[in-house]
Length: 195
Image (cartoon, rainbow, N blue to C red; front, side):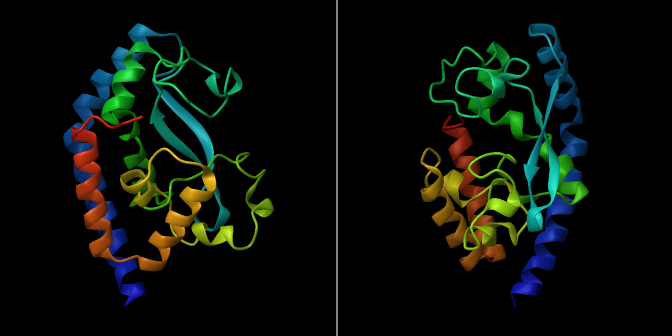
């Protein structure tokens, strides 16, 4: 049953991502121009992340922070919405989660899924996939997601708490759970609870 659910999940990911990319392409252009006109640097932010079975891939997002922000101040962490590294347009994109939309390209490429555990950077909380403890490597048996159970259940928490919820998602995975997470994600965004 799980294998059938995974096949349905991939077909769903492809269809939804291609449709959304087609519909949203004019908005992508508007957002990209707005980013370029309001801050120095590229419109898109590419960063190496750990994905399915430990494979490294480059996640694609709209840039919401100053260039090289992960090497300034608190690094990969943002503790305050008024973090000076976040650009003005970036605050809006984060609060509406619009910065995540380019990840639909990652979904089409097969790097990601629409729903799944969020992909961590290569150097935090462990330095590389090989340094994850064996129990934690289980979170990589599924493609990482644009949204996930953590985002609708916990959002702001420490790594260990997020890991527990990722494991809960993997153990309970079904198409019905994915649909439930998608609906809850839409509600979260509409309520303005983006980061």
